[in-house]
Image (cartoon, rainbow, N blue to C red):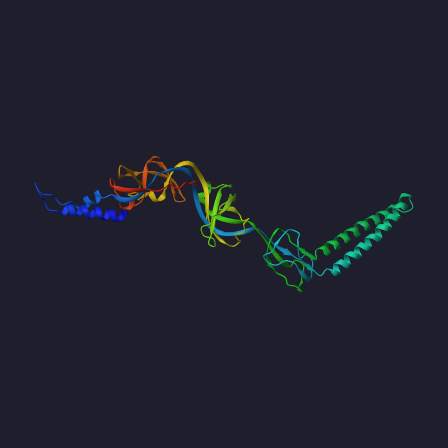
Length: 358
């Protein structure tokens, strides 16, 4: 409707300009520039708002798990039972599989019998030793035998317990590397467990940016599998050294993944907020016009616009911080300024300003 009104206005003005003179004197033809200058241009306007804004830095990397552990077989044996599969969530100490531990059980029972026998003998000789009927060296030898057989029993008991393969950390079984009936050696990898509740990312940042970052800064990230969704991260560590190969330092970020939407290996785009300005004057980035090495906006007053040079600060999230040149109560053009010039007439419609907190 606004476009139609503008066309009719131009046509009417053009028609008036083309009429021959009548009455006293003659009317002169109006130029096209004069017609356009007299025709209001439809624009969309808004007011600056007060809010918080962050200076941000963008980086990309893959996310990984900081808790990823292989589960090793402590003793050799044949796999006789599998209790979990890939994707299962497990707790530290939970039994994942069992090996044939019959031989180990018998060795444990034999060690226990030997221990009980020597304990009885030691108890009998203890009475004799108190009465001085046995030599001290013989009695001390019995004590050493008890200690030795106790250790032997504990070792065989431990080996028998190792026939049950247990989870070393809390997490999700990311791989099962053994099969039922397979004979495996000690130190063979049987499972791999990954804790995905908290992920880690290592960001390589140019050394020129080092002074801007510190532990505790907030960050957000996006992944291709969930476009438009922001996930929260925190910068946990800043390396104090520079990698001489590429002139960067490493910032370590931890990503909360309690919901489980992220998985290790995903490529992520990080936005790190390293500086916050609170309660500053903000305008939409669309309102800014850059020309002739100047940054300006068009301010609306009495149906016309005035080009105003401004000084800007942080630009982030579609908003720009205003340092100088604009007041909070001044109306500015956000849509339609490409065809404007200083003094242009405008037909303004208001845009409701968006709040912005960084």
